[in-house]
Length: 211
Image (tube, rainbow, N blue to C red; front, top):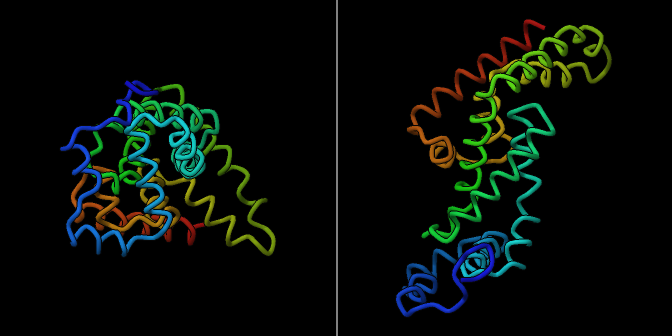
């Protein structure tokens, strides 16, 4: 056993074949990937072998994005930190079972999204979030005056959306995931993602126009 309770770097022949591949198809798929993607995949493989330094680097590369996502969904800095910690704990527990290392980003965001949903279902945080939205709405008339009023109005409108719709916008326009990847993260059909995204954009437009 290696660090994090994972197996050491010693692997059997079958495990080596799973990592190295060897087919020309795998070679050409790899060549089409960016350096960052390849680097992340190599880090995940090293993590699966119990490499603590690789895990520390993986955290450094993804911590900020996961925290930003959790914060945008929950609206709470403390909740975002808790969610990120819980997400990494789940990643440590499950990374050895990740057979396709290329899906790590979607897998990590799916874990974070589920943690956000669980947290928002708790009454105390939901009540706090509602209070923040009410307070923000009350001071909107003063904040929207000025040259950057349109931007602030848009941000205010986003905050009025439900957490699941904020999550959808964040995944699509901030994190840049495509429809298929979002469907995998949220565990819903692609058609559902498209219809929800369409309704969310329309709702956001109406909120901005109303303000």
